[in-house]
Length: 560
Image 1 (cartoon, rainbow, N blue to C red):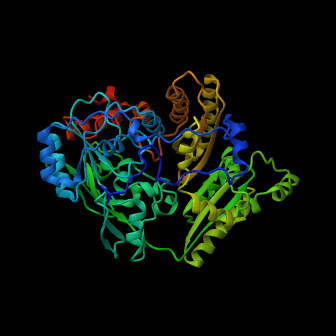
Image 2 (image 1 turned 60 degrees about the horizontal axis):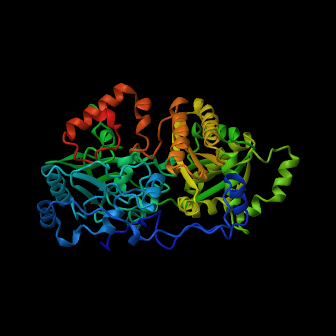
Image 3 (image 1 turned 90 degrees about the horizontal axis):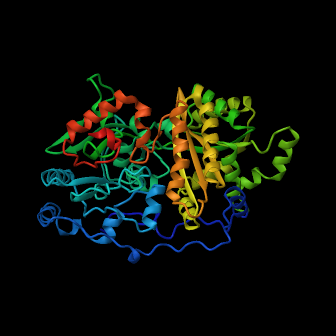
């Protein structure tokens, strides 16, 4: 399937691109100090596909023949490579398993429909044959939503939507575009951009994720302060179910009972296969800037973001890193960059004389888009607010560097894995009134978990999306697991400490990574017993034989 783009089978992104630390002189000593990892030691070799022991396809002959009749011979694939490629997403657990060659259950066939009619035929066949069907977009999911259940004895079909990748039409008057669900972020924006439009949705996974995947997991993008989360952007959609298609028309607002649109958002393939959606689009902005600021501490940064969110300013990005993440960012810069010219010993010496504690400084990035007059107005408001909270302006140089590298961070996880260290992320959202308490306790609980394991670890955080009532906090953690104990057991202890802290201190189990398998243990704590009962009823009514991506979203002990 050369026409459909895929990531590496063993890691993030595309072949030939990787994190490189040799041009970052501060990175190796920083990593050695924080997690005890010596980067002078050789990295593990990239796994070889031929070393994998891939279970044979269990596809029944009659089901295979029917798929060939629906899709044609070139779009039904049972090769080991394609099946393995569609076995896991890109979560930390996924990558540890695939690198170790652990393949308890692999899809039996991968199919590539060209249109909704073919999707409908495959869905209907899956139900008739009592097979399992797992929708697949860009494969970038990091919460376990793509992983087949190890004990599943029925045939498993991975339905790759990569051929459904076009912008079908634009309603210029309404500011809406109809887009097929398999469109990757760059392809979608390139097609919109030809006629001067943008959707503005830029998650970290932008280059390797699709519109359908964004909708299925309730994605959020870096520019959500202006453009909204995917739940705001998506106005209408089409979703194939057995024997029918759910159609949600792209209306600005409705009063038609419980929202069918909201039921589909975040459904992770459990209710059907999303084939297309109507989404908000905007004219490309005349100007765009990302400006960096430096706050004396994280508390000041959070207070400033709250005040900005409740002001008349309209930034596209409001992001502030805590002190640990700021320190990390400073050590991942190259020897000579605009950032180092702004945040160097000279500036630090001035701040030290002013009484700043340089171990607490926090870098912030705020984005602006629009006409010159609009940007001047918003920058003026933001400038007064950040100044009130003690920040200094670093300028466009560091902001431009952040903007250019914003999609590269996931490659760092592969870099760590190559050297025996584990790195992952957890995200949450909470009201402004609870944000500080949540942050402090999550950091404490993560380090308590490290102490219990007897390992040296690091945790850092940034505020990544602001709302009227609160914000998203995005935590990154890394450590080198102790030898002699399963690394995933150690990972689970740290991950669980962070996740439990979220729900204990007024946050949600995830802000934009979804539930999948990894976050299921906290679902009932998050939405309550009655809320879980409602989800269980929804799934039972729409998928009584559990043919549609079973195992994800609902904890297994609650599903049936």
